[in-house]
Length: 165
Image 1 (cartoon, rainbow, N blue to C red):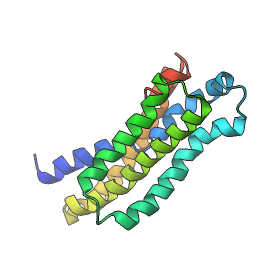
Image 2 (cartoon, helix red, strand yellow; image 1 turned 45 degrees about the horizontal axis):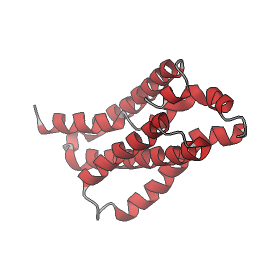
Image 3 (cartoon, rainbow, N blue to C red; image 1 turned 180 degrees about the horizontal axis):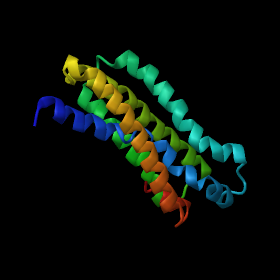
Image 4 (tube, helix red, strand yellow; image 1 turned 60 degrees about the vertical axis):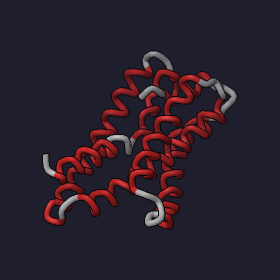
């Protein structure tokens, strides 16, 4: 297996997680029912906060990109998504916890979105870079489809199960 192929497998694996925030979209109505004291706007922030955090992390990443090892960023992104995504399944902390976990997922998404581009530039040979970036977009969309479909299937068992996606 060539160096480029090994790098692509790692990069595309990370990229599949870049739309992790979409996973809970099928449960928005169920979450509204579970938290009647929360406004619809507050519940809908569960899908907006990850995007906001991804932007903030992108700005921070641009400032520290040359100071933090790539492997640390590549591990921290999925770790944030895992912790922020799974915690609501097992801990009953109310809407505040759900919003905080959405922020943690967004941090992970922000790290992944940035590090994959850096890794493509640094690890893929120049003649294969453009094609790899196009393939990366495919994996972003495959990840979005996967997160939404599996999230919908899990939501059939309740909003907490949806967080297993």
